[in-house]
Length: 335
Length: 301
Picture: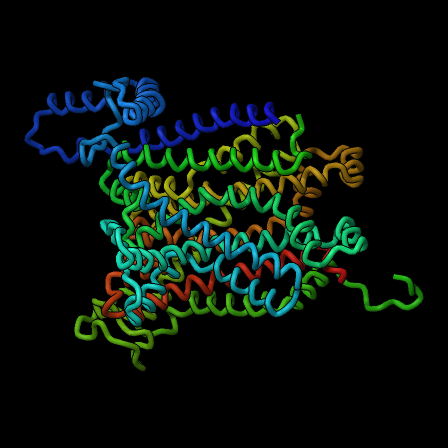
């Protein structure tokens, strides 16, 4: 198991390097000039100096190397400094946003809690709804419940979040006036009243994201349960007189959870991607909301860092899924 | 099977079997009809409907549904139904073309990886790497970076169309490649491939004559899923304001424009959203029915 884990970890490093190179080259090959908005009265030689100050004069591989150093060496040092009060990173050049002229990571750290809070909650809710639905529709295959479940999950697949979100705003904010349509991140939860407010403003974004999650995971759960329900060991369990509840909820469920758990882990990065749209709809100021204006304002360091963070999330959760599969299913550990 | 003296029905081709199984999937049949209606409305609607999508008629702005404008008008008095038809043309055209590109790339990679052992390792690593890319952020970045040069080179509409189609196609071929590779690997072990090779069929002919026809069914299923995915992606990009410019309405763009008037005219977001959802839903159901119909293990039942 240890060698399996180590091998997977080692494989993640070149993957991350490749992705960082793709993102870097994509942004470098782009035919736009960060000096385009500098007034025309600034003489060309001064512009050239400004360009050099931004590190744009150096050859591409030097720029890439410097960016890697900033991303993987200096930023972790800043993190360590922040936690322990040491001074490793003092005076070193960090990744600076061209919009705000402050370190990109500082802004990202401010935005991450909102995203995690909404996205994490949505994923949890989605999974908690999906698993019982999947179990029951597999157990009663082709029943009315199963048919309705299939239809609803088809809708969950097909209705994009930018429509389901807007539709929810129309129904629950505009027509009924139950929930606010804009997520207020300045709200401090310190009393029951503000807790209620927080709950109210979270319901809609969470439900929109959860609908998608539920649709996918309940399908997987159903398929996986169906695979297992016809196996010989289930007949054996029934034959030795175990109650139906024990057979389904212990024997079958345990074995069906193996692929589902990995699907749950693999779905986490996708839901972060989906959160970009949901955050835009509900005006949650998370990292998705940070990305869109940064793209429109041509803030390359910010875009680069954020895209790369999404990539890290994907690689990380792929790794988690792989390792979990190895732990849960001994047949996978082919070492 | 047991009663061989009495043939149950006249002999028929494989595709007739597929069609019969497809017909028995009620959801897929209904969806196929709905999808054809949408396709028909979008293709011929412009000729049948008197209003032009770009005709500005300020006195008639912000109207609700009426007999003249069944879906109302927008803030410049343009007829919403006409804009929906025009938007559908672009959305569905992007969806179909991007799907074809993704299918082409996916089949190319899948067949090469499955058939030529030497390419397998490197191509599948490449597929894994592409699967690990953060697609939506990358799409946004690609659109931002290449929209200006492409619209300068090919004109606004064609430029953005090319950009959208290639961006979506390049980022969505991976599932097809994986499925096709798996099937090709299994096919390669079959006797008819061996016999074809023994009479000296060249690899190119082999792939064209013997491999491709046999991996058609997974390709068709991923084609339907590809259309759904491409339409949603295009609408998502338009919704984020990074798709087609406002003069070229797509369903996503119409939805994006309508959200500005959410408080005043909430009904305006419904139409484009409904069109996207209905199209994607019907395509997904067709894919579901096709998967069942093309699977010989299910077809017998």
